[in-house]
Structure formats: structure tokens, C-alpha cells
Length: 243
Image 1: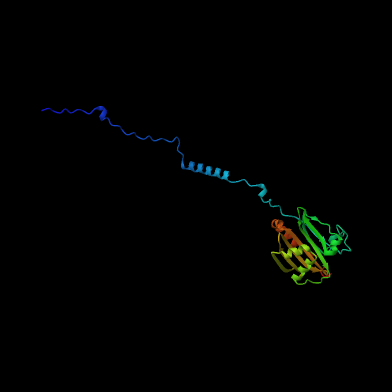
Image 2 (image 1 turned 120 degrees about the vertical axis):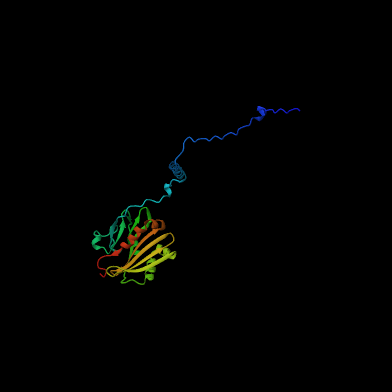
């Protein structure tokens, strides 16, 4: 009986391929969590700087100015016949009938005799940077006491075309009656018109009606409101109001 000869498998056929073990790449450096946070923070800061536009100087608001200083103006309310031109009386303080504050840097406008005689303008100052921003005073003789507030305002408008237009197009008009420490009555008006704001203070003394105006276009009003209100509140008559 023939015996089968067992042959060992061929080395070529019996060789098995061993799977390759994946090689793990070792990082060159390992960052600590703190270092990683610092890197992220730096990256975010850099991105913020790159994305944030630089301010445009032309669009920036003007820097806030220092506290304004004022000069007291002494008004004499002289009649047109006795008006001495620019400067008025040589000693205005001694003969003053009213006072109000004027911001340093504002200019005085020369009031002519004709203007004084027609609408009673006695004094006027304006901002040279914007002449429509101004304060002025008018007076009328022959008034012993104030009429009702609406009547007084309408009478003032009769000789002031700008005031007429302001009242006609007013978005709001407020009026109030106040008394000073001596009991003297003042009518206070605030008019918010089309592109313009006005503060008016009216009182009677020495048989005269005095009206102090502070006017400004809306851009100047929004910028200088505190200063303009100070001018408005600074007006008062002086001396013996009953004389």
C-alpha cells in the first residue's frame, strides 16, 4: 500500500504577510492649555483690530469745550432820540436798566437809530461762527404791566417778522409765568420751530416792556443748549423797577 508522503508546505506559499503597525507621529511640541488660550486670545485680538474701522475725523463730534465764560452786558434802553450810537452812554453800568450775560468771543452788532425807533431793538450779540445764533433785547415804552401771555407774544411778533414765522411754523410752544426774589413777574416762552429754537423772557419795569431773545438754528441749539439756556436765565431788570 502506497503511503502518501506529507510534504511540508512550500515556503513561498506558506509565508503570511504581517499587518503593518501604524506609526504614530509624535508632535514636535506639545502646548499646554494655558499657552493655547493665550494663542487664541492673541488671534482674536488681531482679528478685532483688523475688522474694526478707524474713526473718520470728519464724522467725529467736536471735543467738548471748557466751561464757557461770560461778560455782563449793561443795557440802558435809551430812546432813539437819546441814542448815542455804538457804545451808548459812557457809563452804562451806572445808568443800566437791564443786564444779561454774553459768552466771551461773541460780537456786538451795531443797532441803528432807525432800527431802535421801529422795532425797539436796544442791543444784540451774535456768535461770529454762526451769526444766526444770537441774543438780543427789545423794549417798548408805555407799559405799566404785562397783558396775558398769548397777547404779549402776539404783540411782540407784530414788529418781528422772524418771530412771526417761528410762531406760525412752531412744532411746540410753551409759556410760563415766573417771579423773581422781588416779586417781579416774568413771562418765559420756549418755541421749537422749523429748524430753529427760541427762548424769550418778557417783563415790565419803569413803564417799559423788555423782551430778551435767545435764538439758534437747531444744530447750534443741540450743541450749545446749556450755554443758551444760561443766557436766557441771566436776563433781568436792575435798579428801581417802579421808577
